[in-house]
Length: 155
Image (cartoon, one colour):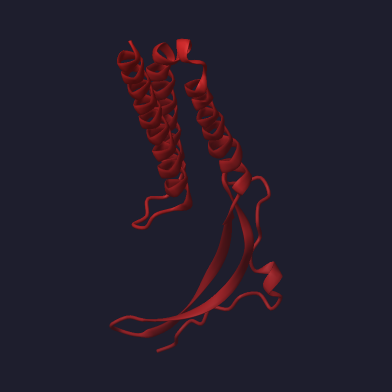
């Protein structure tokens, strides 16, 4: 019984030809290399060829699509620190709008990333800014309540 042994080209650079027209939106091929492998089945032991592709994520995509928009939404909380006469009318609108923007951006970011069992940096980012918005909202509501109480006691 003869077995077939697979071999790559003698020049490993010629073994894999990369088509420059085929691209991935968020990833790029950092490097690729041909490799040998051995497999065993019930009946025989045989050789095989494999190609290992090392991919890197394009950080610019998430900076422009996620971090900058959420940072701008976070800056929308500046409306919370407006003078007192504007405060009560705008606090709810600003907070709810920012939270809606954050939830939309978070869902969009998760759609572009693979599902994994561990926490990613983007999860920490969204957790931090959501907590910041809630803390800012809570702080402002406490200040409004204390200010009203102080005015009632002064009268």
